[in-house]
Structures are given as C-alpha cells and as structure tokens.
Length: 261
Ligand SMILES: Nc1nc2c(c(=O)[nH]1)N[C@H]1C(S)=C(S)[C@@H](COP(=O)(O)O)O[C@H]1N2
Ligand SMILES: [Mo]
Image 1 (cartoon, rainbow, N blue to C red):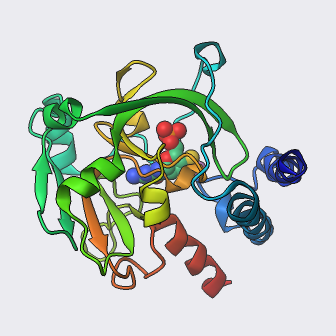
Image 2 (image 1 turned 180 degrees about the horizontal axis):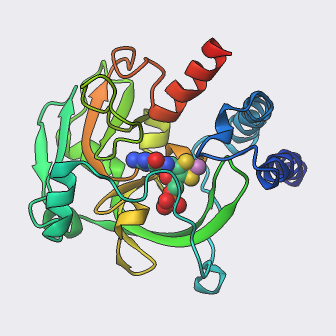
C-alpha cells in the first residue's frame, strides 16, 4: 500500500521535476504556472490521503544516515534578507536575537538562542522536497515546536501556529513597507515529533542562506512550509487577517495568480 502510493507520488514529483527542467516550475516563479498548480493540487490530495488514511498524520518521515547527506543543499526562496534589523542581528552573530512567542498563549515569551539551545534537542537527517521538483538530504538539530508550545501554554481556541519571518521577498511599492514572509501550520503538524525549530544544519550553526538563526522543519510537508528566518511565533484561531488571508506567503501567491489570470 505504502509503496504504491509512494510511487504515485513519485510520478507526480517526476512530472513536476520535468517541468522544472523546462524552467516552468520552481519556488522562484514557476509556482504561478497553471499546470504546476494543478499538479500540486493533485499531489497535495494524494499526499493527504496517503498520510491520513494509511500512514496516519503522526507517522514519522523517513530518517537517513550520515552517508546519505547531500554534498550540496540548495538554498531556495530568500537567501539573504535585506531587512535592516535582521542585518544588524546577523552582523552581530545573532547575539541579540530573541524568538517571540505570543498570540493565544497563557505565557508569552522571548527566547535567546542560548536559551533555545539549552532546551531538549532533536536531531534528524531528512529529505527536503521542494515543489519545484528537487530534493536534498540534510541533518537538522533544534528544539521541538511542541516544547515551545507547552512552555507557552496554548489556549483552547488555538488552531494554527504562524511563523513571522525576517525576509521581505517582494519589493516595496508606493512607499509602503515591504511585507514580511510568513507561514502557518495546524497543531497536528506543529506537535509532530519531527517538527522542530532548527538552529543547526549538518552539525554547524545554521547559515543565512538556510534561514539563520532559526528555521522551521516540518518534515511531512513540502519545502515551502518550512519557514526560514523565524522571528516570531504567533498562535491564532484564524489566519484570515494575515497577508492575503491564505495562511502564508506562498499560499497568498498562488491565490493571486488564480485571481489574476
Ligand atoms: N522565510 C522564508 N522561508 C522559506 C522560503 C522563503 O523564501 N522565505 N522559501 C521556502 C522554500 S520554497 C523552500 S524549498 C525552502 C528552502 O530552504 P533552504 O533554502 O534551506 O533550501 O525554504 C522555504 N522557507
Ligand atoms: Mo520550495
């Protein structure tokens, strides 16, 4: 059963990959291609059916060994945030970085990197799949998101965890501040054992192209859900008020494309 579904997914991934080869797919623009959107919707449906009906949403993503680690792990999307306060933090080795945790929680908090590193950690070697059709295997270490959520005390009305990021992928227009990247996941994903806020990549502190100083790993989902440059975690009951209301930067981009063409 599992192999069958894996190979169906493989076929769709292959189709996406060949589109990528034609320069049609990819996080940097091709995601707006109608065919890519359709294939992605199909992929999402099959993935959802496979994972919830057969594997169960809490089952673990495959973990690999040290020798499987990709020699080159492609950085994608934002690679060098230009936000002034982010640049100041980076110039100082993120000494003054604080992760904010707020929203529908009993105990809003701020954590330095040292405090995050002092929490129980998890290390996992996993495969990152971008919707563009490429995959890389890397080793990630960080704190489980569920640990952070438990420390904050999630209120009953909470439904999603939102990640507010430092990067501003789009140009500012008409003197407005450029919008920051954001993403969101539900609590099933947030509390999954392999869902971590990673500060180390392949055994060394995360570097800027991969999301320094802290990035989400949500291993049962595609790459674009794994917010880099996480500055603030907000627990919400709805994301309708954020961005264009679709729960994330990439999600909002998909919607804009459908509406516009
Ligand atoms: N803040 C932020 N997070 C992001 C992105 C981005 O542009 N900004 N791109 C996403 C996409 S499409 C992918 S494939 C992965 C890439 O992670 P990597 O650069 O470590 O390979 O980050 C995801 N998280
Ligand atoms: Mo991606």
